[in-house]
Image 1 (cartoon, rainbow, N blue to C red):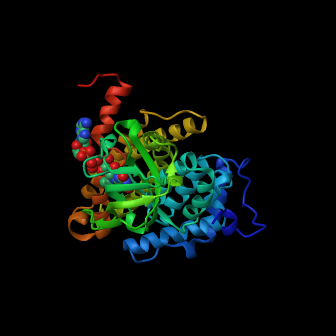
Image 2: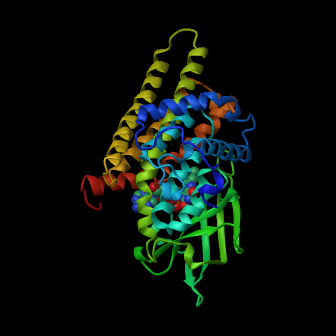
Image 3: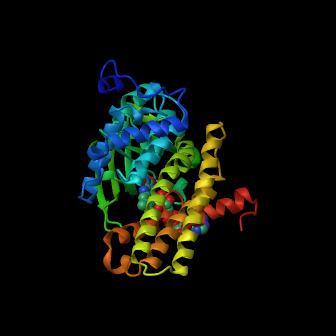
Length: 391
Ligand SMILES: Cc1cc2nc3c(=O)[nH]c(=O)nc-3n(C[C@H](O)[C@H](O)[C@H](O)COP(=O)(O)OP(=O)(O)OC[C@H]3O[C@@H](n4cnc5c(N)ncnc54)[C@H](O)[C@@H]3O)c2cc1C
């Protein structure tokens, strides 16, 4: 399946990818989303199944209308144009709360990897499936003994005489693995950083077992994934033998630019909700409430400014590196501060009454874990940005 199988002949893109400005793109997407608000609205069912269905529905509608293809290369089924168009689209989706912002952003981690590392024919065949919402994919990096120290991973891939690879081992915390049709998987092919090799694995291959794990916010969001003699063709290797570590490192620019922009927008929607609910329950102005909301706003505004600058640097061709750990620290701090503020200004809502705020509060605790823990980011800032040495 390539993009020509999914797009009707004669399809005319809504705007010109190469000449459209960010402001024009934002206005055009916003107008389209407003027009289709009723058909794209989130269902009342908040289960993960319903959420994943909704994610597929939103992506498909955006793909069919062309929006989902901007900012992705033409060779992989996109319409071209700068990466920032993807940030704007995700921002508009998050602003309307059409689908879970974190799940929506997973595409930013997985698709650029495929485009940079997969054989062009494989990327052209697979990318449109993801962009059009027909498939979910997952990221199989972390293992029970290898999270922060990813380079110590042990899931082993051994090449057979016929060229295919046989994979054995276990991954953990793999988001949405139970819904995924494919996995971008890191394996060990020899010792050291240069002994990590990535594969694009079909999740229905015999020998793969997915066992969902329940998070503390009560959702089976991620899973353990077991690989027992899983046979993967050599053509499914991403990049060359030993390219897995650079693939993992190359994710950072996308995760910490486009993805972050989406999440910041989503957090602002929650700040607006919080201000509205706090105002509704106040009989007279409460200075401590105002101060707490002000501090939450300031934290969000700070990361938004920082993130805007990161987007601009990326657009100007900068190579993003350890300085994005600052973005990660600011975002995780703002995320947790916002929900701490909800706990403070809506007394009892999180502990006693409101399932919605409780779920989001609990999920915000993970912000200092996923994508690199708070301690690891601070280590990077200390060692690589401030040159403070190892201890
Ligand atoms: C919601 C969520 C979704 C996730 N989704 C995915 C996914 O889709 N795919 C995937 O591959 N992974 C995923 N992860 C896993 C995530 O990448 C890891 O949890 C993260 O890298 C931390 O690794 P760990 O859990 O093994 O913790 P560990 O690395 O064991 O760390 C435990 C604690 O020790 C601290 N620590 C570790 N090393 C050091 C050090 N050198 N100096 C100071 N402190 C240190 C850490 O900061 C942490 O507090 C997800 C995690 C979460 C929470």
